[in-house]
Length: 478
Image (cartoon, rainbow, N blue to C red; front, side, top):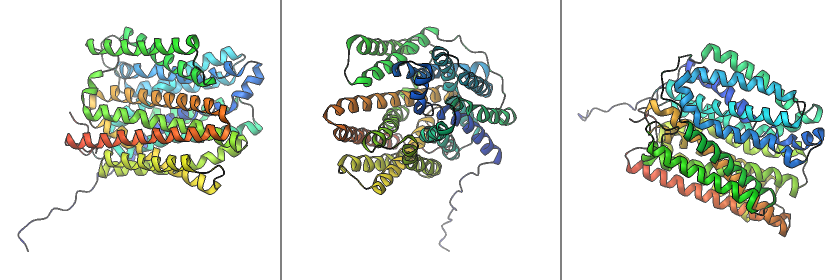
């Protein structure tokens, strides 16, 4: 005996079966909304031909959904308090399912685009409301593992969307791409009515309509300007710079308005926390890398290697597999080691993968390409959950609705910026040939990955200086 009493290492808190049920029910809704971000893209040419319209008009079937999704996010926190977050999730899922069925029956392109906008408005509420439900229900030391299950649905659904869509289009009408949401939504709704908490909302301050107008104008105009810029690679004053300038102005006015209002639509005071603000910046870069890669690599297989739709979907599965494998593991690692080091490790893997693509020759080994895509998927999946948890652990429990809404806005904004950036790079690079275009795009991917790595390193340093490690052992900090 040494006279020194040793204490056994504290075991991680066990997660109850009820908590896992809640997580999987929420994941059902997240999967349905995430699947629609990429499932329809593969059918745009088919939809264009059926309605005898131009591809530019048909693209609004996808763009309208994404823009509406971004617009609905700022109001999620207010609605969560007003009607109750569980009731909001159930209502949004029910509306999403019904509108999906209506999309499948759309008689004209104009009706289809209008319904897709409504569908995007409801889809934008599902993920942040689900994250809030989990954040409020999960105890200390469990948030990373549980949130990772939701992350699998959020990230994996868009990754497998092109493959599922390609298989369905082989033998079914494009309308079945919408009908697939009906059984998924019905099952999730039946389970949600049983397991999702149904607490009533509380009295709240009036909705910040002015702030909603500013951000509701700013976000779509910024994304619209970037999308039009990326469509042909040449900025034109009226269709590109005008909406882009007005959008940026709207966002600037929104920030100024929010900092001066006592009850703003989004609480800008959250960014006073160094950990939350640095995690938000890192989240933008990670989103830009993830969505940018999701744009580039399908085109890489189709344009450079001449693969068909189904074969391209199969090629992309390796990236989705890497993400799906690492998301649950990253949650466990975050609970144990903290968000900072795990996010750095994930973005480091992404740097290795993107650097390899930028340096590889004109005809790389297919096995090497698949291995690098798997590593890239692992990297982006490993970084996603730690960044969310690092942000959540810096805010009080009662402010999670605001935090989840803002994190999801940043994810969509980062994704839109990344997709638009790489579309511009590809469009301009094609002037020098297809191989040159993708070589330049891979270089930009590499630069984005290095920016993500630098931001996560800064996050780790910021958390360390604040005496925090991004590990949800004691629950959200107050």
